Image (tube, rainbow, N blue to C red; front, side):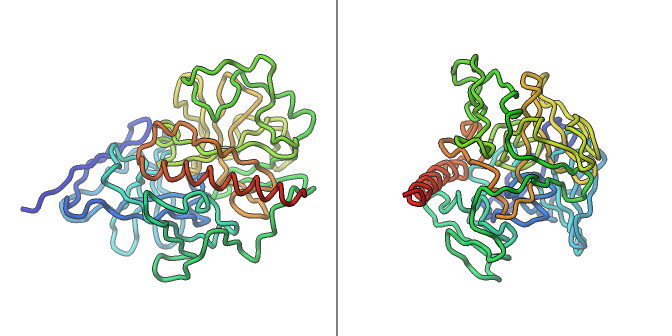
Length: 365
């Protein structure tokens, strides 16, 4: 009998744990990161990935603790009803399942990422611009489906996407795939300075030993005060409550978030559900489609993390006219499950940041 490797996947709250096996000879399994609009809106992250579960030798997952969401005629997604983690894709044509790669207990040597697909939907290249290589391999870059569509270069931008500029538009719409959660972000104002954070920068791990923020330096605002700071996180909690290896957050004062009817931000609205990933950290996700929406720590109630994948910026999924991306490090990169992927993200993001700074300098000259 051919050798098989046993794998286990669990969500953050462990309401669902699934064990399955794959032929050892198939390792490492090559995967492509998906940047499509549906994946972005059901997750809140900029790119997702799943691993196909072989029909042979594996039973059907127990879906009793999961909420089904039919995102298209092709498949139904199943996410944890308690913590919101996207666990499985169930394909209608043959009934096979795929499991979110961020929930695997082991990824190194199991999943080997090759590149990016459905970049067309991002309009600005999205997070694919931050991962031009994976390990020592140039990352494949597919406009739509892998090996069935056009390969595109780094720096691709849709003709539908305007060049990045900090415009005068007053509101940025954010919403999940099903529309059960919708809100608007306004431009920074003097009220944005009234937010507070006891830490100098939440892109730096708590255990780094850095001092607090006694002067309440507004690190959540860009240097020119016109945008919000954003960055990727790969901590275990973020990975396990979404199902995916990387979660991108924008740091926004609640004074700059309003509901569709113009009312100010409130912790619960629409189809939001709350899950505490730790004692002082309530997270919120859509109870209908499973999209991660907010990280809202009790220690900084006036400043909230917004899932970037929900933003509807004119320029594209990176929303650069609204966000200034922190590129010095990948937050909690030391916790990364897939070390090769996150190491590549770290180096690629830093290089991208240098190019952005160079471009801004040349523009000012």
